[in-house]
Image (cartoon, rainbow, N blue to C red; front, top):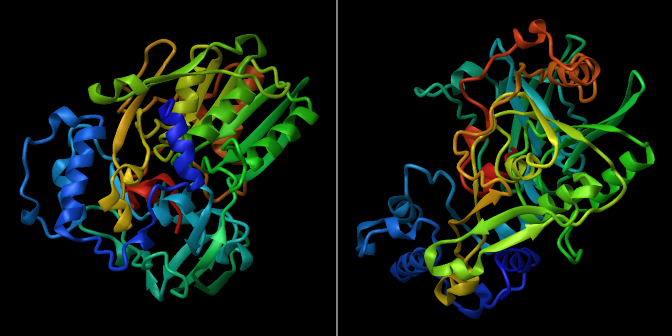
Length: 439
């Protein structure tokens, strides 16, 4: 075991020390499982010194309740439990559900923001910019909670569950669609295009989540490789990367993207360092840039929001010491720490199909920047335009990015469009689903 990245890649590829089927009668909620969670947390949890010395596992009715009681609440909003299969599937884009995202505009109208191509919603022709006006025959206001958020009661992401949505289309007509959840392979790249801005060729890349392609070794994304080849063939000299709905994902894929984006002259420079707890400090590891492809970019403009988290922020933080980085949109989520799954190191967890994914490391860039729990602020705050199709220059954040490339600034008129929704899609999910938020 050479380093944490090796562990992470190994687990994502699915090589497990024990399979749940080894035990003919797995009991995920057994008291022994909670004991195994505690022992594993003491060994691997990044804030293990904040754990209690002893616990009575019988005081808790579920594993989730027990784990929540252990977390270092001032900073840990991220640790979670899932199953081994769910974890592996998520990181290679094997999903179940309808396959769409949403966002509110400034008037609190709800729009589809993205639709996965092969998901039930994608196969039914749903598009970004459709306004959701009813769900299961009820207006949206009926789903508002006392805290100011929403609970649309769409059910778990299990195949066979159906929901009915009434949409207002961009031409003003309405349509009602009943959609049945199913398993599907999600796409990470939602849109890509090249714009001519004066004498410059500007690439625009909408990237929704850092998912590896199953079966590829080393761990990487074929979609990323295809997109970067597209931009290289187009001879772009500027790039806008849209991460506004990107909750994170695979660190290995984040590294792959960084290696395409880095200035050729900075290959072999420090990308970032992993830092584990004091027990595991021998596993601290530094990742070095290894230039891929021929892109020669001096700056990158990122479109961000509170939905930009985890691996999205790792890319931004790692590149900042070496390139001119501009953020347009809103402040990012704030997750300078990461996880890898731990059932491989505990037989009780593995045999009971309990995947423990607590925070196990922090990442630090070459300038020592690590504690961005409040997120990265936008250089230019600009409102979202969920009612506008991808690539349409009426999209305020895309328009602001193109304006910055042309003029070196963003107009006050654009900045005056800024609004921050009180509740966003990332707020509707926890744990594994928060990293890959979609309905």
